[in-house]
Each structure stands twice: as structure tokens, then as C-alpha cells.
Amino acid sequence: MTTTPKLEVPEAMRDFADQSVSQARKAFDTFMTNAQDAITKMEDGASTAQATGTEMQKDAMAFAEEQVASAFDLAQKMVRAKDTTELMTIQANYMRQQMEAVQQQAQDVGSKMSAAAQDAAKSMKT
Image (cartoon, rainbow, N blue to C red):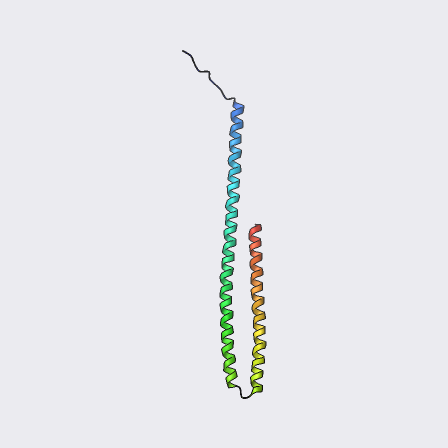
């Protein structure tokens, strides 16, 4: 009867292998944590962008409503004008008000876009 020689792995080799597996597990756990954090940040950024987009759509609708209401007010004032001088004054006032309104709306949109860009940049940094 022949016996198979017993192959022993030295304890130092087993310790080294155990340590290597532990380090690999720790590196993988760190990788997964970082990946989850990155996904969360991307989701937060997407949520912020979506909320900003929704807010911008609501603002656009409000701007449009204001413009239509203003046009109806103009029409009503114009049909009540007594002469061409009053008509021209009404028209000039309307144009001035419209330019101011458009300027204010552009500033509002610019401010919101700037804030959204800053929020997105912050969420990507942290």
C-alpha cells in the first residue's frame, strides 16, 4: 500500500493568503461604497435638474399668462381711447411695460439657471 505524501502549506503562506483576501475584500467594499455614493450624487443632481425644469416650465406658463392678460388690457384700453394721441400714449406705455416685463423675466430665468448650475456643481463636488 502506498500512501500519498501529505502536502502541508506553511503557516506563513496561509497568513499571507488570508491577509491578501482581507485586503481585497476591503478594497472591494471601499469601491462599492464609492460607487453607491456616486450614484446617489447623480440621482440627486438629476432630481435637482428635474425640479428646476419643472419650475422653469411653470414660470414660462406664468409669463405667457401675464403677456396674454396684458394684451387684453391693451386692447380694452385702445378701444376706449378718445383720439389718436391717447391711443399712441396707451401704445407707448404698453411697449415700455412689456420691455420691463421681458427684462425682469429674463433676469429671473438667468438667476434660476445660475442657481441650478451652482447646485449641480456642488452636488458633483461633494
